[in-house]
Length: 313
Image (tube, rainbow, N blue to C red; front, side, top):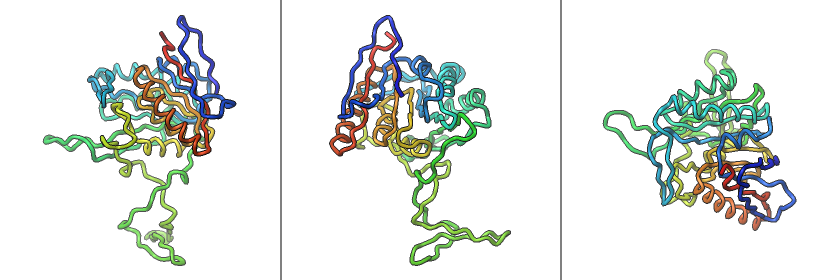
């Protein structure tokens, strides 16, 4: 996917990161306005979009020396602000493409209604509940220990690769375990039909829509960049593997620490990622440059990356 710069009053500052494959069309990191950048993407050019927008906390989010101002805690205004980006995302997706919107309890229900309007209720695929143990506790209610990821598809024939995201089967379930040629198999019998269902343990299973096996990053995790609200690579990796294959194009309109781009680069997906904060772009560039050099040393150099700063100055 080649995206030509649009003329501006002040030309953007362009940098180029090379990893030994200068003949390939570059990926793109943009410091600028997400709506403007999304509007420039050719219709149907993207296979997947994952966004982790501000949660509308109304506070300044702080990390290890890095910070950004979140949106005000006003769900109606939040939806008004986000809707143009949802509309551009739908247009930019291929007919088999998918959008994932990562939110918490503050705005998720408001945004779901907006997504129903933009994509159509029939295009809703899953409400993924990402559960984690880290976080505060409450004396006046149950601890808030989950985020919600809304999955909408552009068309009815959306891409899904279940075998790419299988996880180990849990022991201690209601199914009995038998041996088949020495290999354990989970087995159950339908009481109404008498049909026997058998699931080889070694094959794993496709996850349900509630994920408890991916924890948030703690302060000592090697992935940590210092950017507040950074999400773990394992979370985004499961999403991208579920709906894309190597060579597909993905986008993230709220780059933050660059997790989506980092996972895409490592998995051989092409990417464009955007953030309005110059500090976020600095973090993304450093992270992608380090990983790109490591991939090149391992014999799998990724495409170059064009970094566009001051795009909307």
